Image (cartoon, rainbow, N blue to C red):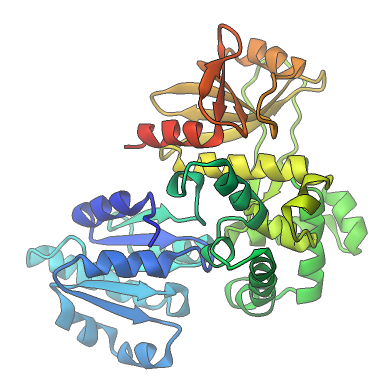
Length: 392
């Protein structure tokens, strides 16, 4: 089993809080991780709420769960039975009075919007939230072939660990179809699967581009508000990231539109029919796909409450990723797909505007070395490990 980097954070949260929610897209490894954590506890109960048999056990949830007051109860696919949250509140409060106020429930959900809304109504002050994404670069071997494999296939375990590239692509194609036909209707407003697939594919073609809702709407013959509704839906399902522009008032003409990324690079490639690394290397989406992959890997391990954005002015000053890290200042990050390289002129102009505390050029190589007095070239894994160390 590949050890997930958030495991210690989840274990610490369970020792400090009554309930912990692991939020992430389907097939990211939430169940495998939860089962491994449960195996380390003296007593644990696992319930899969997609199973009718397990849901039937919760016909009277208070009566059933009260029998497991000293156990860690894992509730998988919690959005299948959101009414359980009100029961959990009563059991948690009762447990606090009897000395069982920590490590009671580990709940897993595949969509942030439902889980946050339902738990927020009942469990304020009683639950911690931890997001688990697909595999990240810090969880895998530190070599070039692994990094390129992660880029091509993405980080979903079923895709990354597939026997070959063809099997990996088939897994991702099936994953997309399952989301469109089953999970979207379950977790969000009803959207025709064919329309949403075309929309998702358009986002992949425009990976990392500024959001132009009217152009997307024209291509699909829908309204601009509907485009935003679709983007918000995929964002809530943790499949798309909307990266906001840096908004501090600097007296500059700043770009105000958001950038939109399909969060997993493997899904980008599946949506575009890219099968092999050879096809990817010569494809127009290669640069934006690499940029999105790097951003996801860095944000996956960044300290909690880190604010992420990009910076761009009408005059051409640009920084691919700006991180405002509590206690560690402002980080400016330029992303390059090559093994070496130097920042563009626009990066230096943007740094003159923002005066960041740290400047990095992230490339596909390994190690770290200075480009100039203020800018460090660094590999993806090395910078991710640096950010991860700040989160400990």
